[in-house]
Every structure is written in structure tokens, then in C-alpha cells.
Length: 154
Image (tube, rainbow, N blue to C red; front, top):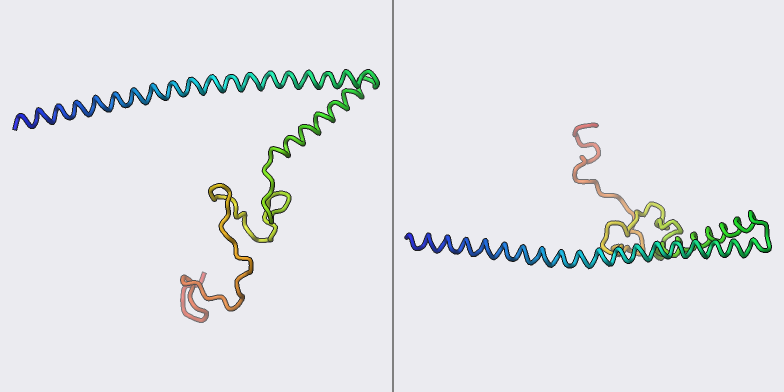
């Protein structure tokens, strides 16, 4: 009996040790991946900052070129309008295109139809029948009493 207890103690010790080794190896792996991700994110951030300064230099050059033939205020105004139009075009390019059968604001084109794309994976809506259901008498709901039947009144 004592030998079995000793073996159980060794098994428990071995399991604990294996779990600790597994945790440490996973932790080291995640640290190495995170280090690479941090470096990549820093490089992307730096490239974005440099691109911002490059864009500002191009805008300044356009303004100075226009200032050669126009007054300074007019050159600055034209440069601002060009940058505003570029920003508007980029914003529209970043937006997803509306799905077929949808209006300009992305709303359903059929009145009373709820947004079928919301809440489904990948924005894919379930199939919708092309014809409305046949009209006729509406059956009573199971939780409402039949007309004329005694029951509680609200």
C-alpha cells in the first residue's frame, strides 16, 4: 500500500514539473513573437510619421508654386481645397461599397426590412424570399385567447 502512495506522489510531481516546463516554453515563445511584433509596429509607426512629413512638404511646395502666380492667401486657399478633396476621396475609398439592393446610406431599400447583414459572420445575410408570403387570415397566437372567449383583460 505504501508503494502505491509513493508512486502516486511521483506521478503528481512529474505532472507538475511537465506543466511548469510547458508553461515556460509557451511563455518564451510568446515573448519572442511579441518582440517581433513590437519591432514591426514601431517601424510602421515611423514610416507613417515620415509619410506625414513628406505630405506636408508636398503641400508646401504646391502652395509656394501657386504663390508665384497668385497672391499668398489665394495659393493657400487653393492648396487647402486640393487637400480637402484628396481627404474626401481617400475617405470614400476606405469605406466598403454598399451591397446590391441597398441605398446610399447602407440602409435596406425595402421599407420595414431590418438590416439583414448585421449580426451574421462576414456580413453575409440569410436568404430572403423574392416574393412576399401569401395574404389571408392571420392565425391567433397561442398565448392570446380566442375572440369572445372568457379570459383576463388588460
